[in-house]
Image (cartoon, rainbow, N blue to C red; front, side, top):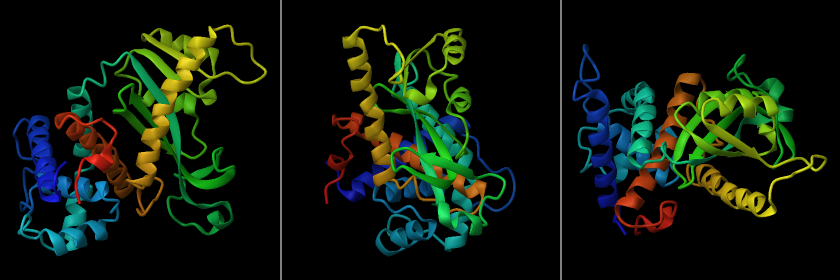
Amino acid sequence: MLSMEDFITAVFCCVDDLLKEVTNGQPIRSRGFQPSLSDSEVIAMEIVAEFQGIDTDKGIWQYFRRHWMSMFPQMKSRSTFVRQAANLWQYKQELQQVLARELNALSDNTHIIDGIPIPLCCFTRAPGCRSFRGEASYGYCAAKKETYYGFHGHLLISASGVITGFTLTAANGGEREAIWDIVGLIHGLLIGDKGYISATLRQELERYGIDLQTALRSNMQDNRPKNWVKLLQTVRRLIETVIGQLCDRFNIEKVWARDMWHLTSRLNRKVLAHTVCVWLNRLFGLEPLQFDSLVTE
């Protein structure tokens, strides 16, 4: 649909408009030297690179240095670029939320929630891992049937596949506790897996206008209509598609950062990149989650 040059331009325009809205047109920095690249340029570069599966700070800088210096002639050293990108972690989160609202995702009556294991290393290497001491922990990945050391991402999406919430906990962080970090802006039906089974949690969510529906364990009696249960299972598959994109295209499971500041920035830009791609697909009349059709080679 778009050439890579047109894609870069479209992403920049989207980010620049959103950043002006978030900051009310006011400068982000009140003192010190202004960076050579604008903040919109830096965030756009990150999104474009993430779309292509380039997710290391060094790789992003090298890609634009080699191929697109004509579009970003003010790009300076890698360390300057990396520092500026990391300092914008909060704005990436805010931009994503504004874009989710513009896509009417937060007002959707149906949402789906699930978790994403984000390992630092496998179980056998964990004792020697020095990163994120006191922040990471051991957890179990049911899909891979293995214990790992790291974090657990908690993802919330609308029925159209737009990410409406994301939070990070240690790998042993409870899903039923983390849910409160991401459901504050939604209402209606919320579909989760067996990890969210809790009569107390369901009652508490009902007070906020959220109807939690989950699959039940084999030893539990399900009195719900079979057609309704089948529909829940069908709708829930959408989050598996989104998680697959976050893992395969945006490499959300890989942790290259060595501190929470840089890790938060990396995760925020991946979630933002996914949402921008959905927005561009909508803009150009494509299916929201068909990212392969967005850019021509």
